[in-house]
Length: 380
Image (cartoon, rainbow, N blue to C red; front, side):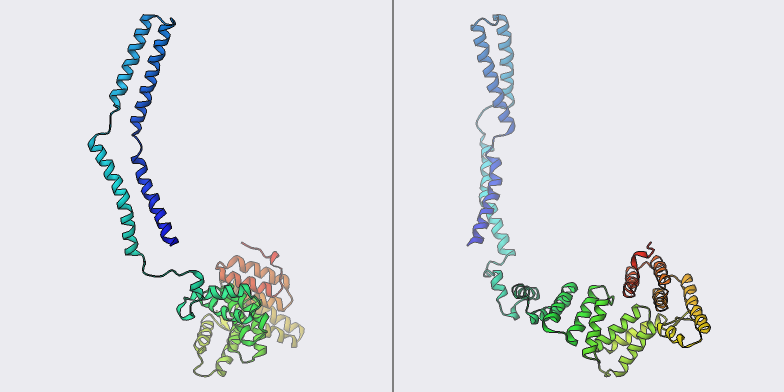
């Protein structure tokens, strides 16, 4: 009933907007009536002045003639006569069209485009409908309303988080998984899902929080393929491509032939190999493990080996400054050696050379993970 009342009020307003101009006189006719009233007042005042002797008869005759001329001119421009028959007919036709035509057109459009045969569906009724009859946004709204009233329902957060991921609401998914882990406890499944949501929210970067979540998942379930894959990805993003490939190959060796995630891991290995993997341009990139192993050598030999490997990598990066993986490897090598200032300087040069926002985020993530001073970096 309320709906039809609103429709009737809107229709009445539309009709009134059409009829209002029809009820007003034309602007020129209104102006003419005002002029005639002024001239008649002037004539009356002129007669009073003549009677009281304030004006001579000759002057009064001249003024009377001028006022009469103006009065006749005003009558000629807009004669004050009743509306003609044709004009009256047009105005009545326009009024009838407004009274009948506007509601008729509105009703016709509603019957053709609307759905008057459907019953009303208030929000509460839609949310209380069986789940099979509700859309995904309606189900999400229902769960969100439930969690707003009961925020300590861990199972509700665990149900909502995968839906957020499906809707690509990654920040909300990460928040939901954090609540689920806090309320339900740490499990390998929940920790791995939390790490994946954090990576998605970070644009594909394995952040420190995501890595910690996967490490907890791996501690609970040492064979967790999801955690092992993303921890390998973290190593690749930090520049240790060889270690990442080794982890992924080990995962493939232990995986069943029909594992649904096997193709994704094989693709990651192939892409890492295409980018150079362990060697590029004839120069092997030093890894942290190799530099640490150099500690078993004599001091002079160790220093010469380290200087040579790092210098070759640094020289190649001066020639090929767009190699983000090489910069990550050099920064990490400097940090392992304890050369923090060199690591900061290399990070600054890398940020100057690298233009892609994704690659810059990888460098900044590594700098933060290594505990370097980001404020000292020379930014473009």
